[in-house]
Image 1 (cartoon, rainbow, N blue to C red):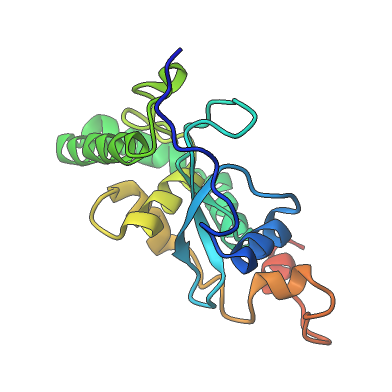
Image 2 (cartoon, rainbow, N blue to C red):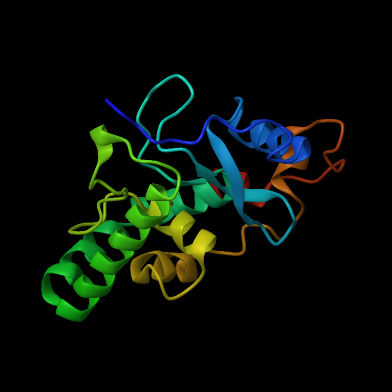
Length: 192
């Protein structure tokens, strides 16, 4: 196996404060981080770009990884409402949508190839692309990272999401020293 993959980044490559914020978001140390691919309007990282092979050797096809717990919670709500099934049905019936979604798959693969080739995941993007919708988290993260117009179903799902950032940064909720007294997380209240 001959992978041409960049070595794992160091804190000099990604700001330590960003890595710390993501660790609070995920509840674990982030792995294989190449860059903060998108920031939430509150200023915190909400999407990471990751290596196609994690430092422990695991192939990792998810190049764009949503980290903000409010964002991922809102996306999970969409998934539970059957949005993926409806999108997959539309892919089977709408040739233009299917073509644009296939182009999003190609874009995802090309951006991952910039970081190296991993044989085990060659040709496999993420989120069900190019034929179905399997994970809205991946599609939304792709849209946030690369901007509108690249992933039509990621853009569509993103447009369906509520404003997840409006009260205060999610990382304040994860850090008791920074959590505003008496403020609750509206995303948590929605789930109750």
